Length: 90
Ligand SMILES: [Zn+2]
Image 1 (cartoon, rainbow, N blue to C red):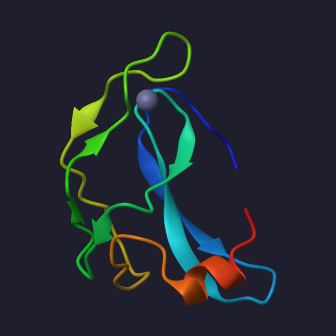
Image 2: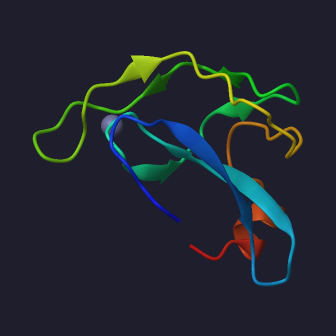
């Protein structure tokens, strides 16, 4: 996985059992992160808006409404379900 700054994108996530998990988002600054408190829709829209809190050397302040291109990982509701938490690996 190559990470470059200023190239926001998303990555599919699969756990060790081969199950599809909530995808990760690469911020405009290059940091990879989970968006567990967001709703990822079937068509790739993400609500509410994505905000990388501006903290010196940690967060870049990027604040946008995401639309994941070529998204095909299904719908993820905001918040971690018990099932999701029990299968989590990170
Ligand atoms: Zn950022």
